[in-house]
Image (tube, rainbow, N blue to C red; front, side, top):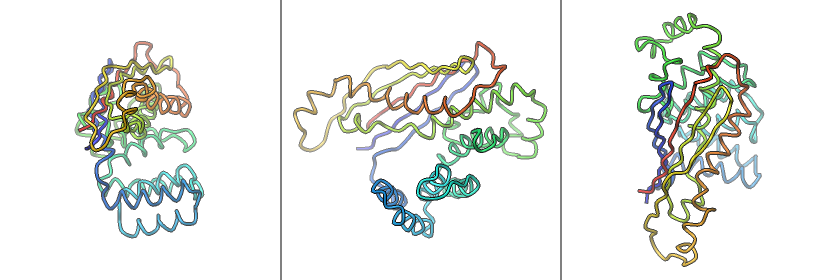
Length: 278
């Protein structure tokens, strides 16, 4: 059974995206290698984690490069080094791991890395939130189509923007890319075979993120199923897992990025997260 979380988004300022997130299909060799590193980290075996990391990197796994970037960005078993994190994220992106672009966009927008607005907007346009079609339709933060894949023209166009617009776009990109990179299918909902929808409303001028739960769906469970699981599938702790998962990331994103001045009061972004089990 494949479990996916899908992000469908619409906004008063033009954001529209469809973001599939695979989470529970059979692991690829690269995912297995990244999982081996993660198990070592969870066991607080940093020396073993670094050894596993080096092994996976030598084998060219994009998933391991993504994990290496995360480790260097957040000082997990290694010394914090944003420049090395970018190197590994770039390797992951080249190897087809689109989440790496989201993490670079979020990192370049972050104040602790010395916010690079142009890099943040550029990488957000390459990330998963751009899937259909993402930031190209985000009116205040869109560049001309001819500049979207031409770095020189991209930077030249951004140089014509007023400072308030650059600051607003850096902020919105930071928050939205963090959500795109970090929201996962809740483990509790997976275990109970429950899917659901959550609509997120981002008001950057406040700033505030509201959530509203939509319909939930119960999927067929395979194999021998505990009766307690069937009985508790509709419990609030299960159906509320989606809001909790999104809320945890949303709170962290709002804390990470300082709100700039000059954001139009009417700016609002609606994002609908659809969690499905296939």
